[in-house]
Image (cartoon, rainbow, N blue to C red):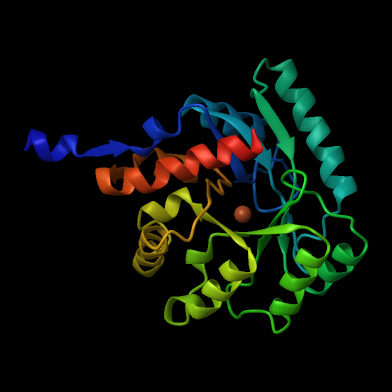
Amino acid sequence: MLTILQKKRLLPELLQNSMDIHCHLIHDIDDGPKTLDDSFHLVKRAMGLGITGFIATPHIMADMYPNTPQNISAQYDVLKQHLMEKDCLPKVFKVAAEYMVDDNFETQLNDKNLLLLSDRYVLIEFPFIQIPMNIEFIIDSLFALEYIPVLAHPERYRYFHEHGDFLTLLKQKGCKFQINALSLSTYYGNSIHKSAMQLLDEGFYSFLGTDIHNQLHLDKLSEIKVRKSTEKLIVPLIDNTRNIFA
Ligand SMILES: [Fe+2]
C-alpha cells in the first residue's frame, strides 16, 4: 500500500518556484476575483502553494469582457500597489491578457495593440461551442506580424476531441499550447482530462498554467496527485514556462 502511495506526488510539490502564465488574479475585471481583497487572498494562497511568479491574464472578449490594455494595466497597477502594501508582492508579477479570438481580436491585432506574455507570445483562447471560421487566417496573421500564439487549454475544446487534426495543423504552423493544471484531474470532466493526458503524452504542450479564477480552483489544484509517468511529462513544461517567462 505504501509503495503505491509513494508513486504519486501532490502537484504543488512540483510547482515550487514556478511561473504561472495564465491566471485570473485581477479584481473586478472579468470572471476572476470580485474585490481587491479577494485578489490579495488568491495571490497569497497561490504563493503559499509555491508559485513565485505570475502573469495575470484577464479575459479580453468583446461581448463578455470588453477590456483593453489601458483598463487592464490601470487595474493591475492598483492590485500591485495593494500587494506591496500587504507585503505580498510575488517575485515576478506581470500583466498580459487572454484574448478570445473574435472580430475584435482581429482589429487589435491589426493595430498591434496587444498585451503580450513576453516579447512575442500572445495568450489566446477559442470559444467552447465551435471553432471560429477564420481561425487559420488569424493564426497566419499572428505569425505574419511575428507573434507566437499560445493556445490556452486546447484540451477544453470538445470539438477537438474527435478532430485533433486541426491541433496538429496549428502545431505545424508553430502555435504553442498551454495545459491547465486542473486538467490533470477530472475537475472539468472526464473527457477533458482524457484529452489532456493524450495531448500530454503526444508532446503537444509547451507550457503549464493554472487558469485560477477563485479559491475553489486552488482547493482543487492543491489536491491533485500525479503519477510518476505524468510527473516526467509535466516537470519539463513547468521548467520551460519558468525559463521563458520569469
Ligand atoms: Fe483563462
